[in-house]
Length: 481
RNA sequence: GUCCCCAUCGUCUAGCCCGGCCCAGGACUCAGCCCUUUCAAGGCUGCUACGCGGGUUCGAAUCCCGCUGGGGACGCCA
View 1 (cartoon, rainbow, N blue to C red):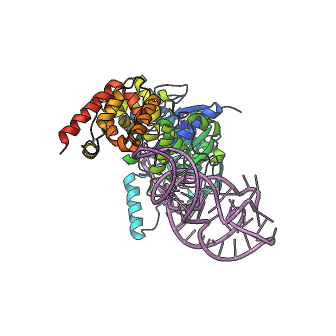
View 2: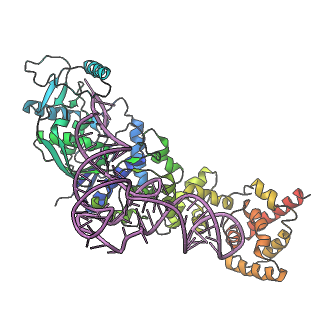
View 3: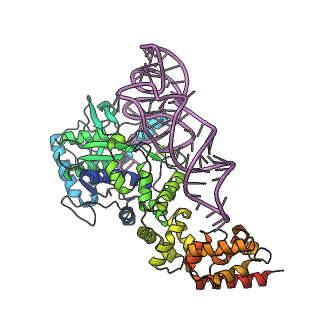
């Protein structure tokens, strides 16, 4: 069996949203799993709405996610160009072929005329659906030299059946189709024609796309047949709706991939969440990209639509940040550094790497990780007002001076050594850790919540710990009543 | 309206193809408990689902039919 060739063909009419990424991911996974080819094609025939900016964003976001393409924009390939507006002559050539064979015919009805007919019908019966009446279907030459579109002559009987890799056999009667426009009057192809010509000439063997395209498939198959070509295989994916159950909109920023990147989500986590949408592998739900490549299969894809759930998404993201397997420390550091920089902090990789184990269970995103790291790299730390008012006051902090002395006398500043020293001292004083911990914590971190104190002390080091303790002591003295 | 598709906890889903092990399992969310120097993490417990009605069968979440509900499409958008 020959290696499959798959494609992701977004139109740059908006930002890349997570629904689109799910489609890209499944195509990509199958290509990687089978040793096939993943192609990126830009479908920019809607000149009104397509922009170079959107196109750039799509490429950037796909790369960020790690969904690189084997052929496509910027990387080239044997079947280029990979942008539809650069393939116009090809569509013309194929259209002429089909015109000659009679599969396509010229239609001189103008958009205005059709709109008027549509409107008139709606007026008579709002429920009715306008269907192109076939006005030009049997027009004989000579043809007028005026603007015209090209329509597909859909057989008036018969049906189209194909075997969908996820939905199974789907049959649609030709009668339900109308003679769809395939080429605009300006010579630019419509989606259904452009996609077919491109998939054919790019040697695509499997078309996997959203279920919203399912209705286009019979028409496209008719086009392949008219071309004398064998249609590719098809796999449609159930729809991914918004949390409200409504269709995801490209202009809905809440689901833009870039949003999640800026919120500090890890690419692997994004892909993991998306992979479980319309696909499952028993009860397992945490996967690395490598796991997915091994386990993905069309047969395990579901058929019913679902809703995007931000809470579950966050939970999966957190699972990735907690796991050394899914997110090795060096990658964790790489993910966090930009957010530290954004907070105006300069931190060296080695120091961050040392603290990472301590903050893993405390940060759901890289953004939160940077926040949890903040006071290790900010001198002096930011003090939380409430924390200071509550704990750096005379009566709560009465042991702070003694703790300072205890720490000052420590020779071994490792966490275990500090713990031993504290335990002994606490016993001697007949105190418990909870009697002294919070003021020390606020003194050290400026906050009421942090990793264990012994770790915090060790990471901060003796010198900085003492200086923070001293600063806190003066705050207590100054603020006491 | 016409064509296509779908239907298990609030959400993502396992189970369905090849009926019994399912008075339905996992996860998220929520509530509670344990652990505990704080916050997390972790452990445990709990709430909540086979849309409805008919069949077939000794037996149906699983097979068949109908109904209802939802979605997609019906553009010189993709």
